[in-house]
Length: 259
Image 1 (cartoon, rainbow, N blue to C red):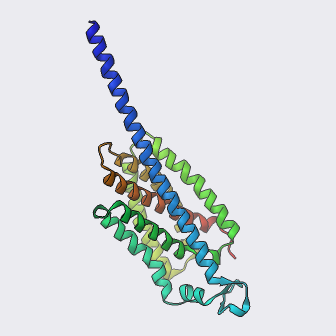
Image 2: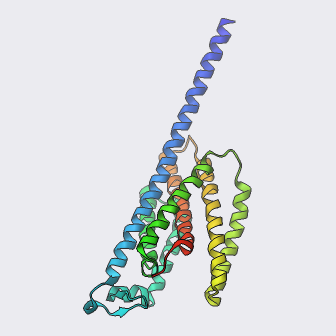
Image 3: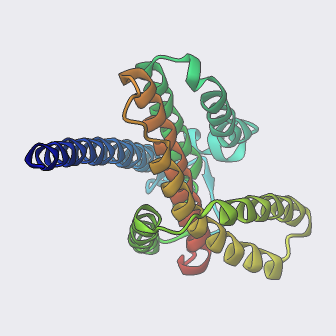
């Protein structure tokens, strides 16, 4: 009888150590995902500020164009915002994110990580134009509101016991409809439709933040090698990065003060 109790105690001890090891590994994995995402956002911010500082000037003598809100563009600004090159700046991040998504399983961790950094920098260049439209104060305010909202939603997605798979399918269908509406509104230029798109966009990416966090958590497997775990962390960071950026841009439509 004593031997049986000792065996049960040893078994429980081994199980507790295994659970603790999994929990520690999961925390380390999720921390890596969040760190990669945060660094990607930092690169985007630096690239956006660097681009707009090179593209605008306060000196009329060095300006080659003046916008309706009084901001003056340098030669560099006129090229990336006013020439056909602006389409390259806008579409290059889209091309790179598809490349990373389809090729990550064949790339080394360092190559995938570098591609993610390049992608984040290109997004920063593309988003730099918001500084020509919205006041800097409202952009900063919206960023912090987005960060607080994202943190709360991601925490809920990480801790909830509810299966969000069904919600993810619904959100994906909503995202397809949102993209179609955005394309249609390029031609209609309807303020009412734009307002509706912004509101729906906030709701969709708020839900995707929680859903993606849960999915990234469930992707973790204790037996993964360093390469597989590294690739998973990068793709998880990319998903959360996209959720954050899109949530920020849709919130900016509501909260941003235009120049």
